[in-house]
Length: 394
Image (tube, rainbow, N blue to C red; front, side):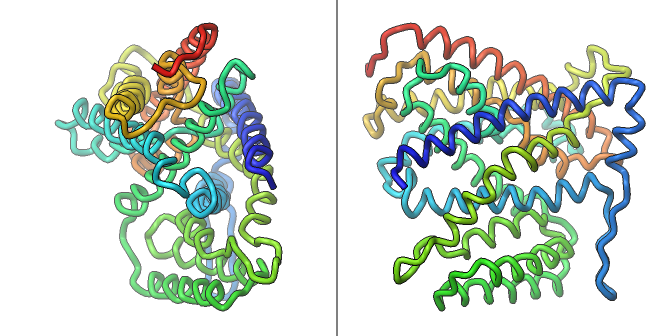
């Protein structure tokens, strides 16, 4: 499939998903702040049990969404990262420099801003990674509203930056949000990983064996204390992208099959389940407390400064070039759009401040929604204004 048609399909899916995410989040906010709020919370608290013999997994519906369905989202992310590294926009160092530098700036600066505002509160510091993430679907969805006024190279820049950003978020989750590790479960997960790698090396191209062992891997990781969604990434890296004898690529086929389900089903469902912030009792402190303020400032200011600053530095040092056909105003607008954390920020927030056991669980979502909405509105407005001017490469 030609690169351009592959990207066009990807962009159309992500753009439509971003708009659907907005609708799902708005619906959750409306329902949870209406007389029907008891139905919303009751639905998310419904206990769901899966049991085979002595093996039992019992969680409320919310955690099945966050730990189970989101594992499929991370499986898709892993497949996209693998494809981009081996054959796409991350295959050559020259293609990685600009979005890579921007992604690093967009992760480091927001975390530093959050840390600065919460450094005196040890309980709040666990949320330092919340403003690091960019919601690729939401950001591309907003950018899509500008249509052909935005050059394709700028969309590619945002997409590649967000993929690197997601990879960084995965590493952060693995290193900093895993607790109470089970040695036995980790050993069993390791055995599953060895089996997956062996199948890859032996040239197994049928998806069935990979998915069966992947399911066992997910259960082991879930029981190990490492976050279960990381099983999705691990499985993705083990599924072959290239095959012998001109056989269809299992990784590419699975990616294409998963993409619409994730874009139109899993992510909107996740947004609906996690964005329903109750506005009862909301006052000025709900926005000015250091936790929501740190998240909102990290997303809006930190992302803008980090992404734009490192992009400008890379171009001025001559180690990278501005996206073809784009101007600095458009890059600045896209840098602001990177502050739309939403899905990934909500996910990291659910790990940092566990709902029901952390006093900051509601506050973090308030900061995420505030920062993401402001980033979406301002990013769109500035990119739209900059797109009216002739493009320059200065």
